[in-house]
Length: 297
Image (cartoon, rainbow, N blue to C red):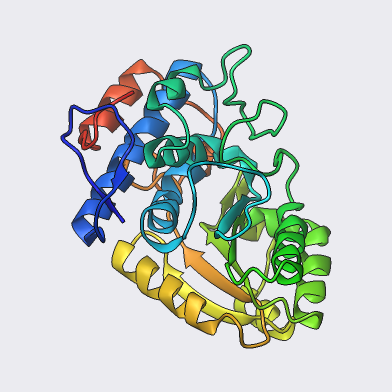
């Protein structure tokens, strides 16, 4: 599918061959580097969860999904991705640019006036790859279920993937959509949950405990898989399991244990980095830990 170009190249990756674990880890490292630079240059943004989910989105867009960078909103005859926890937009934008949906140089406009790269993804600007506005948490599950049903009606056997935060599960709309998906056997949907145990106000267990998340999803009738979301090999293996589980009468969820701020030692497992941009000194330290692999924007 994708291979790394020379580190100095600013161009999007191109489809050539099945990527190795090393290649995918290299992409994820560059994506993390993009996240740090984007939030620093903007002076705002959400680096913590973005860094933690970089391995998953790298695996999806550069190995797992059958998707088309010649973007159209219908998404017929391709796998589609729905981002529900829209505050991890720096991650999403980096992935889309690196995959070839738009020019990598546009990452420098993140959160700037009149930019297509809003703080939370929006559809009004027409940014390729963005299918829903996801500033309000809790809505993405409903959209993903609807998109999966649309594929069923269209006779399209491709899959819908979605990403949700664990703090986001405190929103009740998720649970209504989960009940609906299981009742209607929406078995072409793979939801992923970023279980980093953190949200903007602190630990999820302290703010509003989710209890036994796995047991809850089982009770709601979903096929439940679990993975270390920061281990590329395990992420790929679990996504393969998820694809194999589709088409058997149940929606699938992957519960991903991740570390907020993954890849930057002073950010890791610290909820304060949920929505705070690094200053110039912190950025220099972070970038020293994230070697440039694809060329910066």
